[in-house]
Image (tube, rainbow, N blue to C red; front, side, top):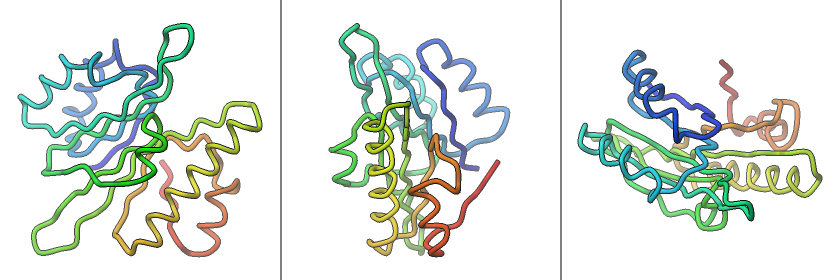
Amino acid sequence: RVATMNVGSISRKWDKVWNIINDNSIDVLCLQETRTTEEISIGFITKARREGWKVFVGDAVRLDGGNYAGGVITLSRWPMKRASSDLDNTYPHRCLSTWLPFKGRRPIRISNIYLQCGTGPEEVREAVTLGENVLMEACNKGDDALVLGDWDRLPDELPASQFIAGGMFNLACD
């Protein structure tokens, strides 16, 4: 089972996340808006790794007031490794790519993204650009890909609408 969740700050929610993982037999979990860094979450990461989980952290951004914004974490019970992506380097607080290998089959690229749109035109433009780039990367490389995350966009808004209309990907709704 693969799941995604916007946690809106993970620091005081680790126990809830563990309960959700265990109660629902989740194998891969993509978290968005974690508002944390690997250094801050070292206790959780150590516990997860001790229990056999692979943990990948895309650091949050420290704001002027000292708070953190953004941040993505991918957890996997299955073998997984970090994928190389220019998008992860450009948007480390919004995008995290990993490979999920399968014996005898092509691996699946999992892109965990957080596209906060906010209210300003610059924030919307950045989110749309990142969304387009993640989807184009998934389509153009010929990889089997799963793009998960918090889109803050409706299916009929850009960038999703043009990819759905073009048949480049299918939409999965909860």
